[in-house]
Length: 96
Image (tube, rainbow, N blue to C red; front, side, top):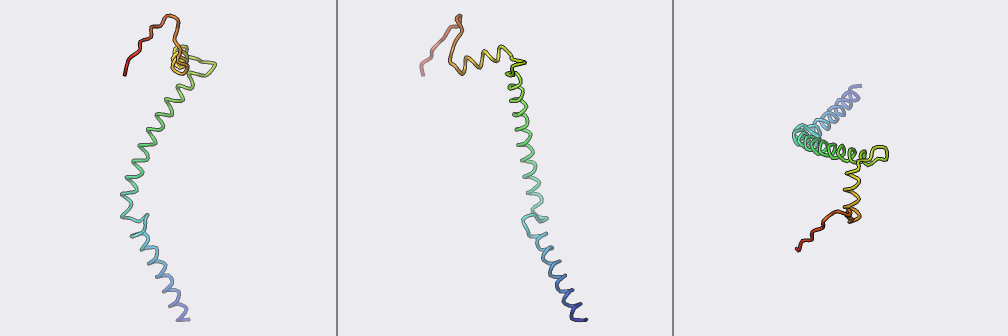
């Protein structure tokens, strides 16, 4: 029985040492927590920027829906995409 107790104790100490080493030196260990927090903060900032872009794009798409078309936006998009002008417009060409 004494050998069995010694073997269980050794295995438990080895497992404890394994997890303690990974907690201290592993890629997700205590010393790397600051780097992970900085990365999270940077990603949250990027997420907020993307959310704002998405809200703006959803607003523009909402203005182009058939039930709520904004005539000015429609006119602007048609002119820019089709390279067309209205009958009373003056076109000025510049040389590069």
